[in-house]
Image 1 (spheres, rainbow, N blue to C red):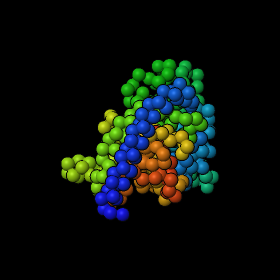
Image 2: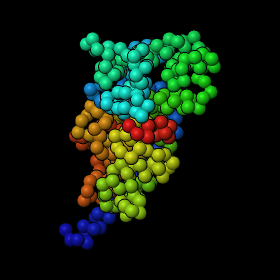
Image 3: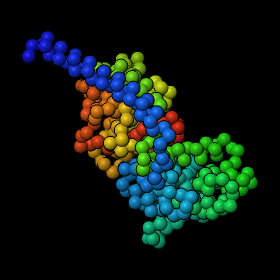
Image 4: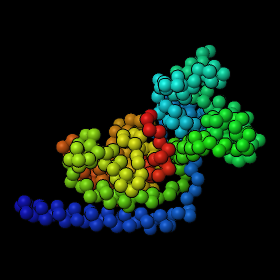
Length: 335
């Protein structure tokens, strides 16, 4: 084949692909209209790989300790507190994966693994202790009007006396934000049982990424002038959603927690798709792209490549996230 013919064929293929993408983008809004009134609540089982495998069984077990708690909610708390880091220590001397301060640990720490020791640094003790503490707080406010889970979380932040005094979540901005943050994050750790809402910003994110096709990859690139407009994988997805008013974390494994997780056969254009060598741990995710439909994504693959269309069905496909504005806002700034 001559160079000229090859160029004509390549141009035709790219043109067809772009037209295909535009049809898919339009389809986002069609699907949104069809689904908007038919989306159900998510289950409380954990989403695939959302919790590192080393802690998943403990979270699943202890997350069912009382009716006010569930595994996804417990996972959201642990992620918010430490990013599942068992060695985390805050400037306020909070310690371990559940970030207990010494005084609270002395009162509420439990020997979760039955080895005769209550160790704040051992997730086998700290995770059961977090669940036990939550459920104890829930028992204090069980007769308070309103949602028991929200009152439990408010008690965790402001104390049960404040919840009792105000007859529900107290009018403290910090406490109200804490309750909203954890209940929103819960959705990113729960495995949905039905289709989840399409993203309202999906079409705009795809449009942004589409304009960057052919741009050279740059590790750590955010598309700034200093980067000569180049991106790495998570820099591209961050910029694409930032263009429609949603601020995502910088790295791929944190972006995974920016919303609920549709199944492979429920993907819609605009979903973020993730890849990992470890199918059991979202913290091991190393690559992300923006799904455009038909089994393809736009991504910034690696050094030496350009932003392009790639298939998502590889051996390292991990899962997907339907980004939501509230989900992105709920993510901790550092994990």
